[in-house]
View 1 (cartoon, rainbow, N blue to C red):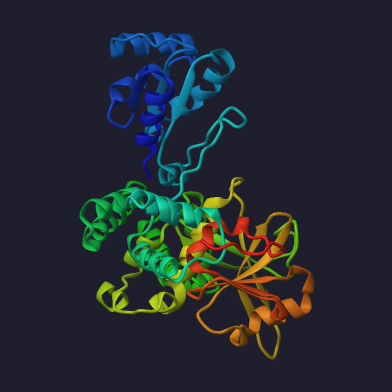
View 2 (cartoon, rainbow, N blue to C red):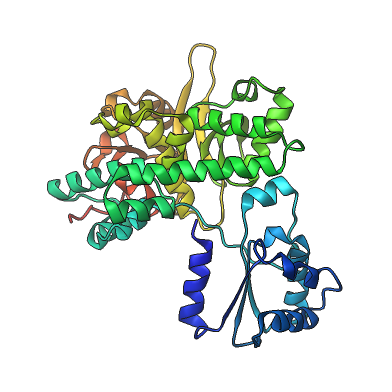
Length: 416
């Protein structure tokens, strides 16, 4: 996800180059330093001797990379915070290994920064189209027809490239989707190699099976019994929980009633996403040649790719690591379901990912009839921006999924 690059970039801009970077997975010879007492002054002195350079509190940045490889270093973070607060310390590590290895972090002594895949607007900037990135980040509104078609074309590429930084870089450098696909394959193989480290305690077969099944089930309600034929539902539930903790999968909780605070009326039903839309397709084994031939973005893998993308964008803009939600009504005669419920400003709004006209939005209309206060409903599609006041709907182009928080139905849209 680019953790190491981000820290090095921060150090170059803010610490005048005084960065002391230690990869604790490679430098296992340094682990004994953390094995004794955890006096931070003693630890810094020992590190200075081993590295041959002074670490100056208040000036330098100490970077403990791959910290999950040395659990005692994680415990030491507490004492750095309490006894040597003038020294800036950043630790980075694999969430997958934290989850599967049962590693804990000192509560109340560490500030967390979560890294997620590159968003669509960040992707546009990454491939060198800053103007398009600014249009998308500015929020939903009417744009010129040529701009609309251009952004849909870029979004089509993004749905296949995804937001993993290495895949975006590979595509930006060559312009070839196959290079991004090669990165996806490498990342998936790395995940599976990490699963192997924890066999048999966690069960590699279960983890791999569940992760693949979730990728194939995006947009569908999850039943543990259907995620794996290799284990019992309780075992599958544990595997799902581990993948969720590692943020390889993300739960979308069902709501019976739409309102704030979101989740106050959550049901036991849930759907799930995987970490990235590009990886989702590799994990699910989608035939790229078949899906690439489809002209309808919402037709790719029967709409699941678009639903994964929208959920990924909604998660990325959350500053509080909030849960995602959808609305579902169960009835004896029929069911109704709206893909997402998003907090926009001080309101909860239903969000549907749809290719059809407004008249086919049956579930959305049912929800708006039951709860008129949650209007307008937001429909994400390939259609241009439009406000359908009589139907209490706003049609928003898919490429604005990550900037819905800027949507204000009371303002007249501007044109770009």
